[in-house]
Image (tube, rainbow, N blue to C red; front, side):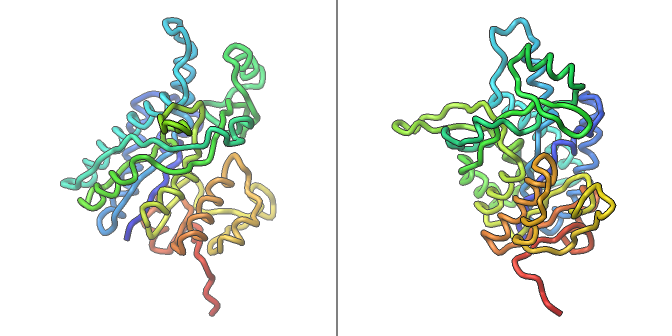
Length: 307
């Protein structure tokens, strides 16, 4: 079975943790352990978020007085693909001796006229107090918005159209290679309408919607979205909170999940299942094997079986 695994950016750097290299290296061991069992009998493609990491690099770049201007988000996204890809490859190499593993810096084509460029809403970086966030916004020209526990920078998040490296990823899978790709949604690029030439876009593509499109393009059987909760919850955070364990795309889309948390994951799972007839699931990282085998998480499938 071919499985696309989507890891959240917090798999490497949990909320509240210092963005130290040692902390991220230690966290990745947990990721590799959770995924290794799945890799024994399945083809795996792994993609990941980069919100904490790209926010950290953006802050460093904006504060570097040696630069005449901060690095653009597309290049910072490429840096996070290299950073996280290297950590994943090394950890998976130790967890899966003898397995061929490759990390591919992936470019994601987006539309230059995507309305998302005028409505920044993708959270990146750490959480600040309102006063600190406003000061950073004034200093660097950033957009900010309220997130859980405080305020964060928000950037445009255009929809992914296609990936430039899809044929290469197909070739690697044909050689029984575990592939890490499209990290952080991929490096966002736009194509000139006349020449087709590529230029970077000041944006961060949503990694869950990227994972859904990647799974569709690669003809995956299963899209596995791993996060920090055991399943999807209806009315999350209220006295009426209840687990959603088995659901169709239509039912999942009716859930009204928040755009800043479960919303993109729910839409990605629903989109993949509706377009391909495959299966998707959302659940906790440590339960990855159990989720695929139907013992944990929220399963999304085209039609519910009536007993």
